[in-house]
Image (cartoon, rainbow, N blue to C red; front, side, top):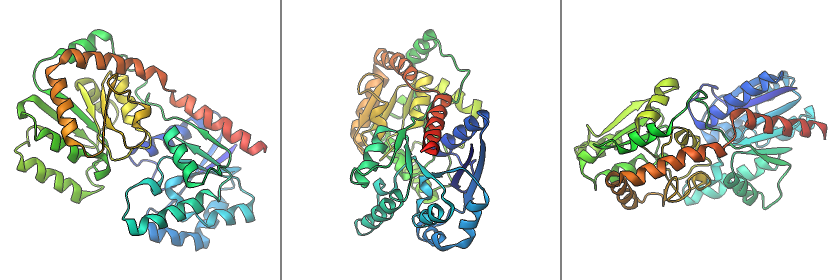
Length: 362
């Protein structure tokens, strides 16, 4: 097959969605498929809507001469009307890959209806839909009033560290180590990831009981990062909470190994690849009830779920885990066991490829 993948910006962007895209492309290429990356400029939502009337972008897609086109759903503002032209003039089957629906993100009340209308219109222009979780599927179904085109669920994997083998005695030793509870946050530092909730929780705890490392980009919402730094300084926690910036590869694997708990109290996650990655290293995870974290975190078994923005509940959990290392060990062992229930990236790629073949045969 000759497959197009349409994205905003570069394939090298550090996020769970773009990691998913890279893993998919690598798998398709190993299977002998040709993959053409079609990149549109990442601009403001309203400027991207203007792409629909641009002859340049239509011709760019047409020039790729692909058999089937996969669109990263994040690019939907550029394609809401352009897709109809692609189908009508090129007869091109168009599939979307949904990592995160804009309609279910947080918007002011006076504009949220417009985001939903535009995204619904986009989803109605498609021949098929690939979603990354049961939660995303349910939201897509809701947005389309149950009128879904052919679709499939292809769960993200957490096995980008394919050579990792964490023995039980390592987990036991790590969980029981005395001193501050070592907490890891992995995610780009944006408000939706909820780092301020963690900082608020730590303000209620003794400084010497916790050490936090945040691994993720710091340039996406600089005003938010400045707000966090001010919160940390006002509480005198500069030595307790460290921002590492972007961390990848073996350096990231080492952070997973070295820490005892993963915390990411996001307002919303459409899946949460880093939750699964943490489980590969036997790390319990604290997430929130906002989104699909509940598909990964079993309450009280391999981690905990709190309500979004509930720093008090988070503080209580952190204090309990700091004081009860046997509980931390039990959660860690169950987290490691939980990792085995997720597909590999190759299995995810196989699911999508079989779906694409079926779509082309129809």
